[in-house]
Amino acid sequence: MRYLMQALVKTQKGVGFLELREVPEPVPGPGEALIEVKACGICGTDIHVKHDAFPYWPPVILGHEFSGQVVALGPETEGIEIGARVVSEPHTRHCGHCYLCRTGNIQICASKRSPGWGIDGAFAKYVVMPVKLLHRIPDHMSYDQAALVEPAANAVCDIVERAGIMAGDFVVVLGPGPIGLLSALTARAAGARHVVIIGTPADEEVRLKKARELGLDTVLNVAESNPQEVVLDLTGGWGADLVIEASGAAAAIASAFDLVRKLGKVCAIGLTGKERIGFPWDQAMAKVCTVTFNMSTQYTSWDRTIALIATGKIPAGELISHREPLANWEQVFADVEAQRALKALLIP
Image 1 (cartoon, rainbow, N blue to C red):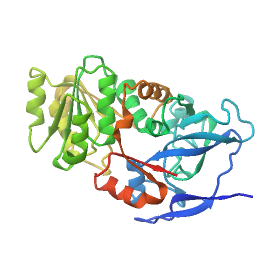
Image 2 (image 1 turned 120 degrees about the horizontal axis):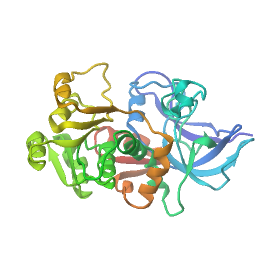
Image 3 (image 1 turned 90 degrees about the vertical axis):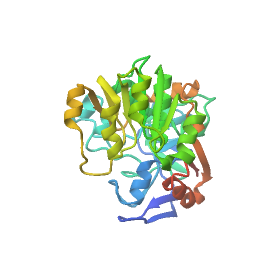
Image 4 (image 1 turned 180 degrees about the vertical axis):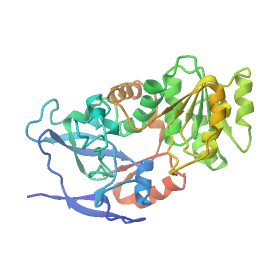
């Protein structure tokens, strides 16, 4: 007999159509674990799915930034035990045999269907995940902290592993949302000598306030300061070694090439949600800068991120602004969309 559980479901295509409903508890198959969800963060992807602005296959349970405990195992399962405290890579349904999978890039396999949009996710009491995607978390790490491993792993993957930040770099972060703040904390943990984070008046009340509380070196509101003048002044006229674009805003993306030094680096993280935007091509060419585009996480970034959070080098838990039961999802989603929240957790 299968029991029922409450889950936040995108029921059909279109704007809206989110509903808290009872669904059957999942059953783990071969090589899979049944995980009791302890905390799950609301991601921008969840908001995009709500507004029909991201690919998804309804009806589907939302949520992919989760932590939990293994409570059952399917057949033919090795490498994990019941009771293990875990987080999970979201790269489900990758094919395993294409060029990308065979070269270790399962995160961008065309067949990938991640939890929360491609398969049922973690805004529910239980979620099923392949054991090969699980990572253990240390006993002293709280489940709330662990729910931020997935977004933090994006920052670690993009900034440390792909953009190749160097100790002593001068770093600018465009966009003080959760990913931008995690990017700034990652840059600091990686040895940046100075971190500047830039936002707009809409960011002032919550996001820029948090940036100051986190002790970031320079926090700028574009309505009050000229970022290019500030950055050039702080770098002796050179510009930033590394600019991290975490806003997805067209104006901010263009400004990255005002801020980066010649032969510097731009790390692109934010998605625009648009098919095309303007781009200062000749300016980028003249600066001979390196632009790194990014999507999702690599295997190696997960244990690295767990260690950085567990040791306090990335104080990800300080970004948690909301911790509410799943039943309160509607108000929490509204706070996220209105930028009254930083990282919001739903507790099934």
